[in-house]
Image (tube, rainbow, N blue to C red):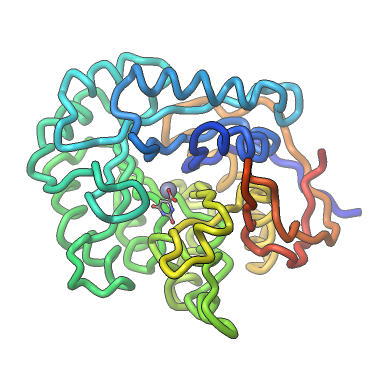
Length: 349
Ligand code: DOR
Ligand code: ZN
């Protein structure tokens, strides 16, 4: 059987929610990944170091029984949620805390649980300055929130109207442009220096916007930023598989119950954690080139965050298997990405 062995990967963008849903999903990530950047968009959000440390304890309790190979205990890398009221002291405390690895900018109204997000970037220039000084990573949900802007153009407009300016004003602020979805984002990041990186999800590598409407409306393919045209997917595949140091894996695995997804106003979010590494392998398989798989999965993100690479290894077997149709999600059900479909690489337990 053909196998691929790589350094244990990390997930540089993950939603774990909170109890009891946290316990339902955390093991899926902890089995495959060494570390994950944990998104702070709980309700209420993770606003300061104290919230982050309590949340970290709950995550560690949920993952303590599972570790990917027994060699590494899964490490949650915490982030704060920026609001109009976040203080410079909150940023300083975060940069002094060994368990906090960044602060997330959600433009208010951009996505799930972003109501407490930032209403106007000019209100948080002082925070950007403090983050730049302390080299605390700014993770950005990069979409314009003006409702007049076409939903498929929101990332491009955010680059033009906001991100370019942040980069000009704070050139040494480390920024991760999260879950990029467009050719324009790939080009923008590629043209940047080592203060700029980007995560790419498995679903944005595997589907284009036709998948939202194949035979009817497909709520389990709906996420934000929404999947785009094929030409954009191809740019993302080229960026991920090319080994360029700016680009790294971040699943944006974002669980919502089946009923919350299959609704007249379904939530944004794709659940991929149960087979995340296998989905990335599928994308590289379809691209026909695994040369830089380990670089994308296990090296570039750690290098960007200034962290050592994981010590363990994981192996994938070339073997057909089917993604489960559904998973238990506390009192509810969770439909994973590509439920019931066949993948060609299987994580070796
Ligand atoms: O699709 C998404 N789901 N995009 C986000 O930005 C947030 C996430 C969630 O928390 O459900
Ligand atoms: Zn996310």
